[in-house]
Image (cartoon, rainbow, N blue to C red; front, side):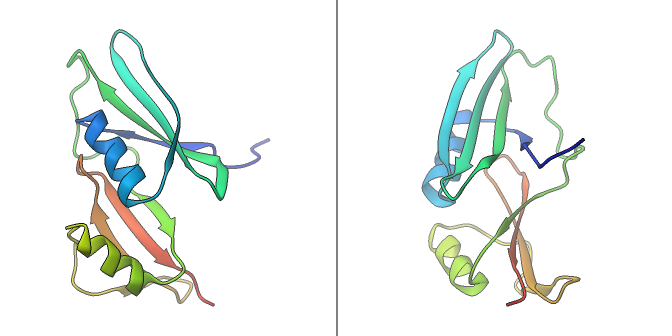
Length: 128
């Protein structure tokens, strides 16, 4: 029986750049980083939610071609105040895919942006 989400894996082009983005800009912490002959991996988490992680994977051999489209469509982050978060990210020179925040199905608000390897990321402000 499934108990909870474990992690979301993201293929990245540059591990150091991606770790810096997720830690310095989005506030993740690195739990584990290591490598195998064909790939480098890192597991990151939020202090407030240690049971859910993202795994960053960088292929070293070129045997697996990086794809702009994949099984994982996007990674979503819940935020308290989407306007403040957008302003913070814009100060870090993060560009958004649209100029306006859009409504969610549940009446909240959301907007998309890209990570350093082109991964599709979403901010979600839930209904209060």
